[in-house]
Amino acid sequence: SSAWPQPRFATQRQDHLDGSNAKMWKQAYYVNDTFWKAGSSAPVFLCIGGEGPPMDGSAVVDSVHCNVAVEWCRETGALMFALEHRYYGCHNSEACPVANLSEPGALRFQSSRQALGDIAGFVEYATQEFALSSANRWVTFGGSYPGMLAGWARLKFPHLIHASVSSSAPVRAELEMRGYNDVVAQAYAVAHERVRGSPACRQAIAEGHRKIGDLFASEQGRGRLATLFGEAAAWYAEKGNQVGFAGQGVAQFPAQSNDPTCDEAMCNIAKICVEMTNVSIGDEVQRLAEVRCMQAQAAATRRLASPVRAAKTPTPGYGNGDQLWAWQTCTEFGFYQTCAQGSQCFYKQGLATLDEEMSFCGSMFNISNAVVASNIAHSNAYYGADHPQGSRVLYVNGEVDPWHANSINAPLAPALPALYVDGASHHAWTHPSLKSDQDSVVAVRAKIRAMVGKWLAEPAHEANVTLHI
Image (cartoon, rainbow, N blue to C red; front, side, top):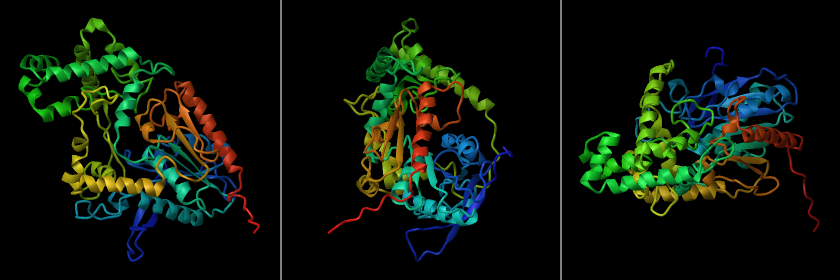
C-alpha cells in the first residue's frame, strides 16, 4: 500500500567480521514516528526482520511480527523502526549485500552473526540520524527467527539494547528436530482456547497414516490409495513418492499456523478434527482423503483470488529466495523435522528421515552432514542455546506452536522470564489485535507490556557491586 511508510536505507558493512573488507551495502529500514517527539526520553522499538515474506512499510504500522509494539507507540510516544534482514532484502537488488546470488560464495555473508552486526550498526546509525540520546532506551521485538535475533541482540549488546521480547524463538539449534512433529500431534489433542482438538482426533490421524503405510505394501492397498487420492497404483510403490506423499502428512495439519477463526475448509485444528472424528465418512484413511481434497479445493480458490504484488527488481539469482533460509539451516541451525519410528509424530513414521530432510545441504551447498552437525554445536556454544545468561529478555511461546519444542518455556531467572500461552500458535500475540483473538493471546499482550514497562523504568546499567578486599 502506498499509504505505508516507504523504505529508507542505512549503509552497512558487507562483512562485520573482517576488518580488511571495506565493501558496503544499503539496508532497508522503515520508520513510524507518528507519536514520537524529538528530544523526548521515549523508548525506541526495533522490529527485527527475518526470513518471512519481503518486508514492507506494514512492518511498523500493521505488523505480523511486532504489532504488540506498534499498538503501544501511542501510549509510550515511542519511535519505531523495522530493519530488514540482510539477503532477505535481495528481492530488491538495491538492498542486497552482493551483486549476484548465483556466484560461488555469494551466500558467505549470510548469518545470524552478521545480522546482529547489522543491528549494532543500525543502532549507531539511527542514534545519529534521529538525534537520540542515552535516555531513549532500545527494545527489540521479533517472532520466530527474528525472535531469536531480538533476544540475542540484548544478550550480545546490552550496552545498546535495553530489553527484548523474543516471541516463538527456537533458540536451541538442533540437527534432528523430532520435537516439531511431536508437538504438532500434541496440538491436535488440545481442546481449550477454542482450539477444539481431542485425543480421538489425534488418534484418528495417526491411525489413518499407519493404515496408509500398510496399504503401500500390497497391490490391492495401492489400488485403494489410487482410488482415494489419485495417481496410478504403481506410483505408491516408489519409496520417493511414499516420502513425499505421507512422510510429513497426506494433508496439511496446521499447528504452527493454527487460527481458530479462519474460514476456509479444513484450515485449522477444529475443522480438521470435526472431519477426522466423523465415522460416517468411512475409516480413517477415507477421512484423511476427504481433508486433503477439501484443502486442495480451498487452495485453488485462494490462488485465483490472490492479488499480484508489484515487485522490485530482484538481485540476479534470487529466485524465490528459499535458498537463503536453507543456507542458514545448513550453516547454523539445523531444525530438520523428522517423523521417526517410536516418536509421537502422527504421520507415517520412518519416511521423513534425517538424511532425507537435510539432503539439500549436500546437493545445494556441498556441506556434509558432519559439518552441519558441527555448525549447530557451534551456534549453541556461541548463543547459549536454551540456557543463556543475561537479563531483560522475555521469552514468549504458544502451546500449539511446534517451535516451542526448542525454545524457553519457563523462566530461567527473575531477569530472564518466560510466558507460555495456552492454545496459541506461532507468535499469534504479535499479530494485529482482533476482537476474535483468543483470551490467552489478549492476556499475554498485557503481560508483555507490563514487563517491558517495568524494564523501561530500570536504569540502563546494573548497579555496580563494590568488592571489598
